[in-house]
Figure 1 (cartoon, rainbow, N blue to C red):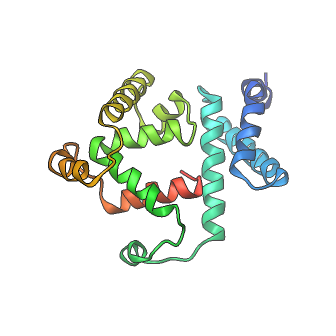
Figure 2: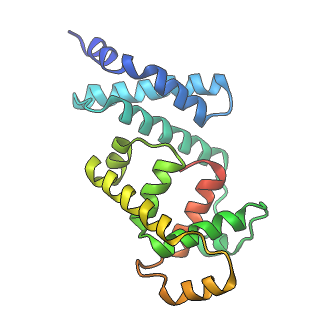
Length: 194
């Protein structure tokens, strides 16, 4: 059997899901189709070069996501030093609430736990996709997500100044992420791009 036929058989069951995912990532049906075609070409090149295609759907999702991120960067290629970018105000009215929730989460969860929770609950990654991206096992992902959700449920969202003051004394047991990480998470949530 020739390489293209083997590749086609491996990805065929996943095309519907990948096409839907490409539609989610792009703003039009035409861009989604272009992204799908480019994704398939890159995946085939990878398969031809390595001979490996163990998790086709995860690989196709990752390639599509990276291609879309690259395209977005090319369209918005203004370079600003990091220190200056962190000082620039955001004018979106949701920025404060999104940033506040992320800061609250980071007080109770580690960076890795927060990252996994965002990938699973906001960006709809599968357990396998999270494991692939973060270089861990699926059971580890399930355990971390279960533990993280339970930890946040137990703490609840603080409602008043008294609980915020109390939280200030006992929070940050996990260590706060740096401002760049919080800003990256906030931007990802607001733009829908990981």
